[in-house]
Amino acid sequence: MVTTQADSEDTVEVALRMLSRGFVDLHLGVRSGEIVDPFQLPESMGTGMQMLSRLCLTSAVGDIADSIHCLSDMARRLPVGGWGVPALAAPFRFAEVKLLSPEPVAPTEECRALAAKGQPDDAFEDIHHRQLREIVQRVRTEQRLQIYSILRERIVRKPVYERRELSDFLEENGVVVADEVLRRWSTEIPLGAMRRDGSFNICGNCGGLLYPHRDTTAFPEGRCRIGPCLEELPSSRAGATIESASGWRVYADDILAYWVGPGLSEIQLHDELREAGVDVVLYPRDDAADVGRSHELGIDVKSYSCPRLLGETLSERLGGLATFNRRYVAVPDAMVNRRPHYLEDLRLAYRGSTSVVFAKVGDVVGLVVG
Image 1 (cartoon, rainbow, N blue to C red):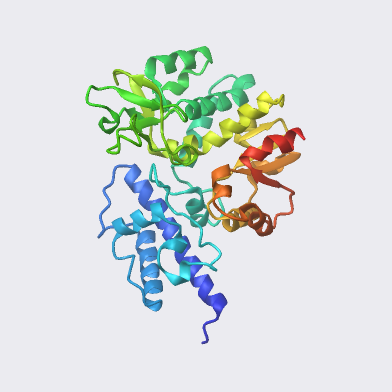
Image 2 (cartoon, rainbow, N blue to C red):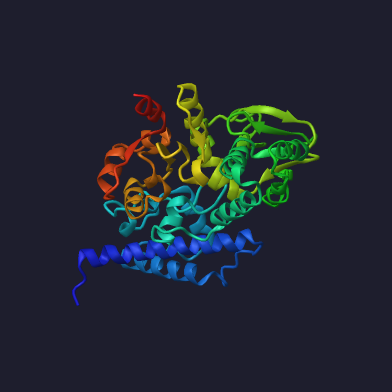
């Protein structure tokens, strides 16, 4: 049998999908308290690494899949096209995909899309969605749609919180039932975020923790570990200093990676549209979109490094965004700015029958207002 170029590309894509599934499975295990044992990896991870080793062998390059720890470190720092494996490099259509976020380390949205072939994945993000909806179902009917938005917005705006203040907030909004779940989603302030006197700093941009850093010249007040925040403002600055960690908590890495980090652009869009006189809410109609209004306007923020994968994923499944009359997909400015022709490639890759406007986050308000 003659191996064609198409066959070769299919094999590479299958390997990438298996690696993605492996990273998702591995993350689920770590999140539940398991230790990463190189000799007892999830079957999906083992299969993906074997396929990657084969690509290395046939390309006559060093085997980058011989250590899960080294592979994970590479996956959080570089897109797959930068791993040194010719089969994964351009012109491979998913060469720009990043499988792990740098900080906090977790499978990216791209990774989960590849792992699930564009369908919703039963990872922790979906578990959090489901638990939040269960809370919503327990409040009075007329408040349900508002409560989902209120709770989700609260988490994004205040990833670090004081327990007493949160309890007061929940009581004022009639959702005391959410207190236990939100506490399970969070942990006490980690020792690594505290200074020697027991105090800690909160990021002035995203509201997350600032961790003391050895480069005190560049980060005199500490360094934020939420990736999109660092990308937007590399020089972290403190918005507040808390003298004692007693009674304070921070949401788990899954929440920070899947809700808080991407939520920065969502909050920005929401606030700028409101300032421009557009009546929108966050996560309208039970999260049918990230920002929107009724059935009229829906905006989703997508942070894929690879525009081709984003276009193909949206072609397969537009989700709740398809239910709005006006539909926008917004990509963070920094992501578009560092990648020439990002939006053009995204438009070319999108094959869906539903019309969508693709734009930078910073341009959406102008497009909506006209």
